[in-house]
Length: 328
Image 1 (cartoon, one colour):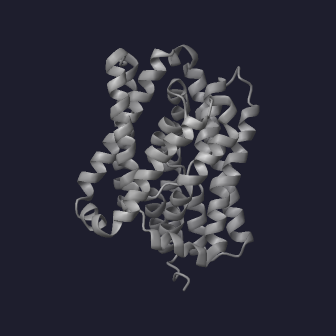
Image 2: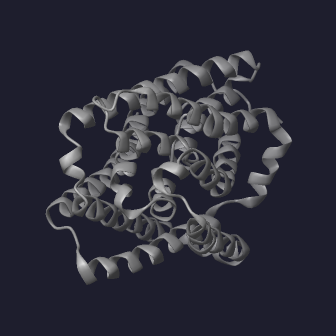
Image 3: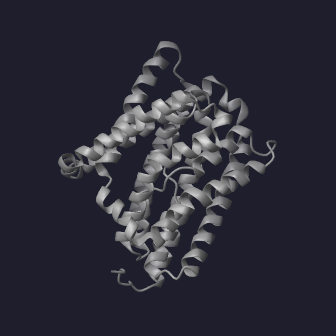
């Protein structure tokens, strides 16, 4: 129980900082030359984030996922096939209930990779296959660097104006620093692990900066004239329904495919998550500045809901079951 509380408390502090960034941007949005300077800072911050992702991501473990293709293929299928289909289904909700821009934000969050830290932590609390969770979450993020831009181009491209310029930005701001981090991982990973608190503060600070910039653009373009309390409540309800559907599906699929209990936990915990840390910077690269505020708002709501719900589920699963040896 204490482990769950510590994890949720730590992540809640991050969420609070993001909400403060939204509040500050709502009252003090940047404009003119200051906005141009902030945009440059965001480009640097996004590059730094994906460089760190490259350094941290254990490539060998991600590649080893191919050995257990049924489990990790199932996680990928839920993350990049089932979730997007549910995101498309939510576009049928009337715009009188949820504004179109927020519905597109719901679709965008379904196109993102899984989380890493919380997926592994909750798998451990639920007494699942922790090694499998490390591989599944790592492989999801490795695949997401390529699959998320492709899905955005295919499912959102015509709506948000995805263009050839976007492809160039993906290469320069996402892929190049990520690949550089992977190439330098051998030398930098020990340093990053030794100074985990410092690097965590810098990458979370970068996400907060990106959120502030995104909502500054949104406020200037009138985000709060479109989004009201009723719309936010409706988005929260849809996020709850989305998470419930995926949790139910992953639970059923784990049993249907004959996975061990430890591996069923991996599918449940890794398959049901969406990464805020990757999603916000990806939005700044893949989407027009005027739409980013709308796009990341559903993601922020879903992120908090998934953490609270999965923390409760993980604790109950851990209390109810004896540890099961991991599969060889």
